[in-house]
Length: 186
Image (tube, rainbow, N blue to C red):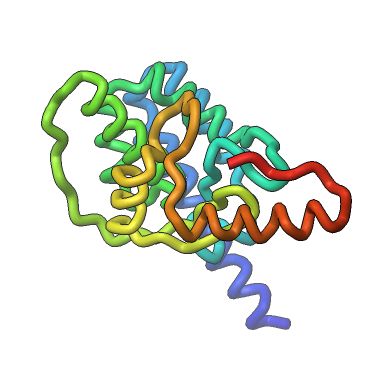
């Protein structure tokens, strides 16, 4: 019992310290950026935060639902400055998922403005839900997904799917057809 109490005190002190660190750090951001970051913080599930620094979501998750986290990301793209995005990305106290969204926004803004982006070598990992599938991505893998799949577009018209993804959708559609359920679109 005594060890459990000591563990809980140490754990809560660590979390409290991270919250205070975030609040001091975020004071330099605009009110709009702070509001979006706080909303993203509130949307992260406690179990995924403990395992992998929060979970990112693509625009469409599960059975075609639009992700609230991705909606907040789209707002972040509109209001955050390049300086704020780079600060979020570089802050190790920030959740990995929020750093991932900052990376996506930064790359998107650089592409949109036709600017050369700075290259980094961060070591964080984050979980990403794309449709119904969840996978853990390193920083390098996330950057690759952003580039290859146009993953960063805050208002995508259509994602570019690779061959494996199309095969999975085709297999799923065969099962749906047998069950009389509406087919998934590519």
